[in-house]
Length: 60
Image 1 (tube, one colour):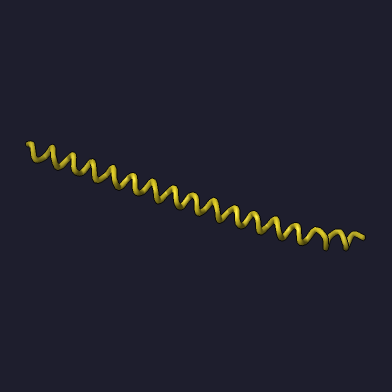
Image 2 (tube, helix red, strand yellow):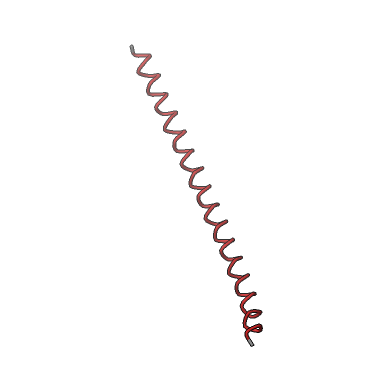
């Protein structure tokens, strides 16, 4: 009886592991997307700062 219980548990365990794996992949994809968006924003801010510094230097 205990052996049957173990065999009934294995598919559930594998399905649970698969869900955890898919969840991890979704989290990594979301983090990658967020990091990419943050990098884009930082680059835009850097370009704006450089333009501002160039405008200030031309006025001197």
